[in-house]
Amino acid sequence: MNKRGVILIIVLVTVLIAAILANIILSFILSHYRVTYHQSSRVQAYYASLAGVNLARENLRKGTWTSGTYTLCKSGCTVNDNDIPYKVTINIGNPDAKGIRTIKLTAAYTYTP
Image 1 (cartoon, rainbow, N blue to C red):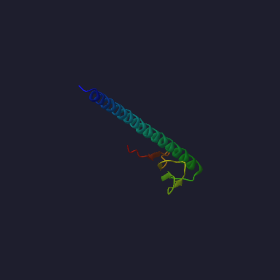
Image 2 (image 1 turned 60 degrees about the horizontal axis):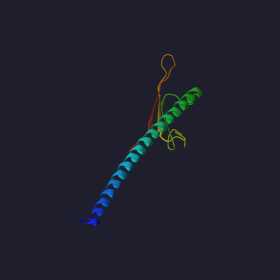
Image 3 (image 1 turned 120 degrees about the vertical axis):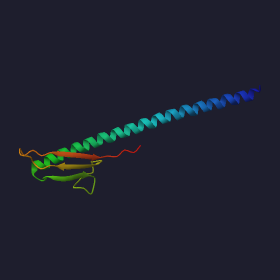
Image 4 (image 1 turned 180 degrees about the vertical axis):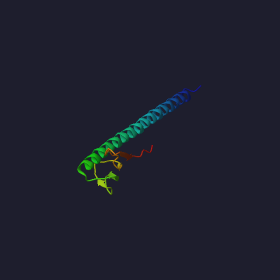
């Protein structure tokens, strides 16, 4: 058998193995990136909701807000705040017999892989 042919086959197999390993490593890195991005989006949405709770409590304490639906986002909402990354919807219920109101929040964050 020709030595050049054997060397060519060895080089081709080596390049093929290197390409497969690079593809596996790249796939792992991209998958990890997507999971990390999704997790950070969830954390940001959680803290945006927490900001909404604090805002609702403060406005109820001051008497600025009553029962109803309010939105908190960057622009075009009931409350505009550039630090809020996601739209937060705040639903404030009517007071019950003891004067207690319910506050329900929804943080609208999207994740597309």
